[in-house]
Length: 197
Image (tube, rainbow, N blue to C red; front, side, top):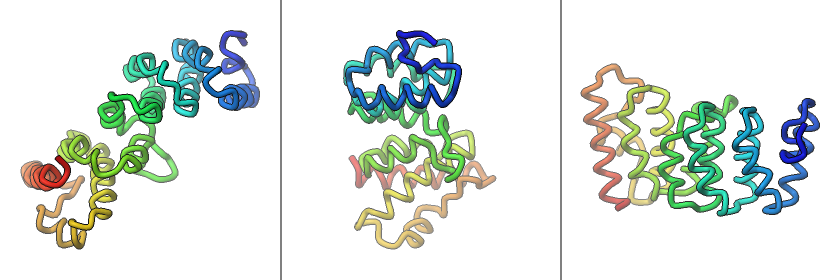
């Protein structure tokens, strides 16, 4: 364990958890420790550091978090995107879209950290999420459709979901007909674009 990481690198997981809690309670005074943690060789330390920066919301960390979006570990990337959103950084929407698959909620599939944050941000994210309806991987399409469906259902102008879904091509993230899925995804993008400029 090194003093400069405030115990985030302790051998005992319980000690790591206690150190993390103490750093979060200290607020933005912990920013230097979390920034050093982002550069750690230990992926768990990097993840907890990004999570801590999301908790403390210090804008000084924005550039380091943007760099962490290229981390080899998907959990670190997911937390970095979450932290950028918590800070309110201009790069956060792109970061959340890029990391929509990076930190799955294993108890609430297909949710990820990014889907939760995107939904919380509201309908303005829809134009950025809509292109993922035609992503190469079905899991990505499911997550994008989860965000779209949740946000569109909350829009008064959407009317009944079933009627709208049928009118826009009965989009199916698992559909085997790539051309039909692409047509439906394009209809959704057009519908969204007309209502969320």
